[in-house]
Each structure stands twice: as C-alpha cells, then as structure tokens.
Image (cartoon, rainbow, N blue to C red; front, side, top):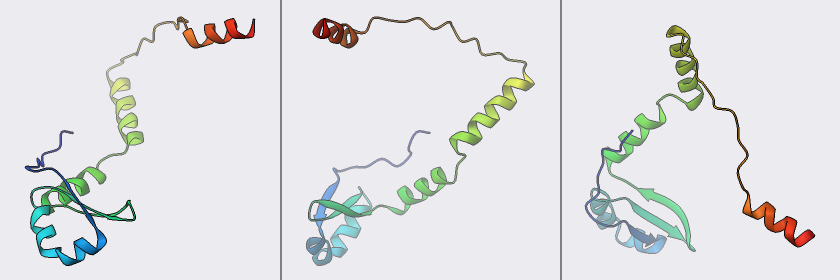
Length: 104
C-alpha cells in the first residue's frame, strides 16, 4: 500500500530539553513532517500529524502476512491454479571458491 501522507519539509530532530522548551513549535511542525525526539542520541519519541497516525493505525489493523497467504491459498484452490516452481539450479559462488583456494 502506497502511503498517502506526503511531507513538505525535512524531518526535524529534537533533544528532550529543546522539545519541552519549544513544544508548541514542535506540534505545529508535526503537521508538515514527523518530529523525532532524542535522549542521549537515542530516539525516544516521535510526533506525527493526525493523518499520518490514522494511516499507521489503518495499516496496523490490516491483514497479517499469514492471513494474506491463507487468502492466496484459497484463491489458488478455487481457480485450480498450480504454482510451477522451476527446478533448483546451483550457481557459482565466488566466496566458496575463494575459501577452497585458501584451504588448498
């Protein structure tokens, strides 16, 4: 699924003290782009627009990969579709060849 939220400006990184001091500004800027808050160079929070958050929630509530595969199997069975997997063929492995050269 292609994200629908587009951002106008680069993401800003804040330290905790700066985020506290300029909270209103950070909230305003979150409307245009996610705002990342760091503590000792570790990301501790992100402030995003309501639209971005709603999009994330809808993505998170979507079907899991397991559910997608179950649906795919059902569709394949209904259509009598058989996935043809070509026979496996070994290919050259330069790393393995280099190991052989070193160990000889």
